Amino acid sequence: MKPGDRMRLTGGFIVLGIGLAVTEIETVIITAALHVFSFAVSPVLFGAFGMATTILVGWWVRLDAEKAFEWADRHGFLDREEETSRVIAVRQHCPKPWLVALHLQLHPELTGHA
Image 1 (tube, rainbow, N blue to C red):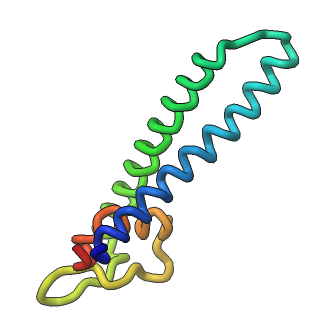
Image 2: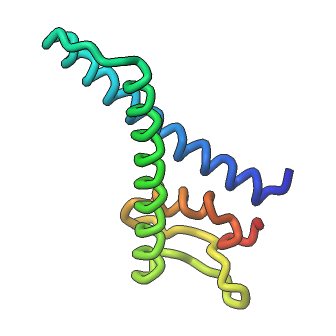
């Protein structure tokens, strides 16, 4: 497997993991609330809710990562190679560095690993 494909796959699993974690937390809270009020919900409906939530949270995290990367790029928090303009580092005091790093994992062509 190419390094760029491995980076992209790792980034995708991180996004999926965040989506699943948020969905799981919401499910526990909603299940507890439904239990308190003695309200029954179909497992199919609950599954559809979980799937939609996971997809939406994943989309949201990707969008946040893209915005964080663009902001860091505009404000000079990315170190780049002179001739190729590839990103080689994220500066130390960059706000939301993990989102910038996630965007770089999802787009390895920005670092030259494609």
